[in-house]
Length: 90
Image (cartoon, rainbow, N blue to C red; front, top):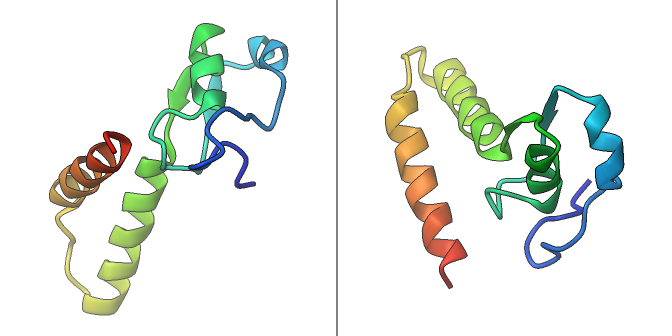
């Protein structure tokens, strides 16, 4: 679901009270890096994973399929993170 994606950054697909029942929460959204869902989950002591991780690793897997070479995942992650942080500062 795109709920919580820029520009609708104050929405979450679930009420924060529900999150206390979970240890881990992942959001596929990567803009913003910390969605309301992830902030609410962290406040409930959940371990959280942003959509940036999935975005980078999907891209890396595709690059490996196309080129048969191991992609520079850490470099990809660094570049994506820098770009997303630039977007958030606007």
